[in-house]
Image 1 (cartoon, rainbow, N blue to C red):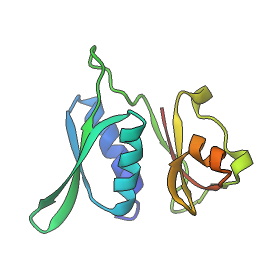
Image 2 (cartoon, one colour):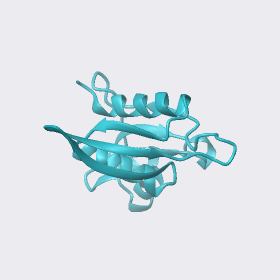
Image 3 (cartoon, rainbow, N blue to C red):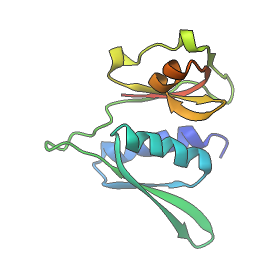
Image 4 (cartoon, rainbow, N blue to C red):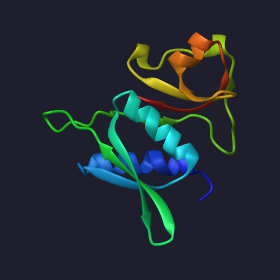
Length: 130
């Protein structure tokens, strides 16, 4: 797999489209940190780290509203392995008028666009979630 972030976002999108309660992704520090941000921002319920035979996996619990609408209405990969997108702290804008978040890889680790603007840090814009 060349791009674990795109794989993770596609698995979440597909599982939510058919109303699954959980989705399993290959575990890595990057995908775990990304999932922790989604939990903190209220897009996912929780994360469980598990072992399946020799492989580590992370089980993500998807969040739904009372009318079975997913908490995530859209996901978009911004920076790709073939084309990296870097932004300075002043260039980081709001996602969907402040309704969504952008996840940015900064020198201090992964953080949301709001945290990066507050700390005046720029970095690689990984994805947007709304």
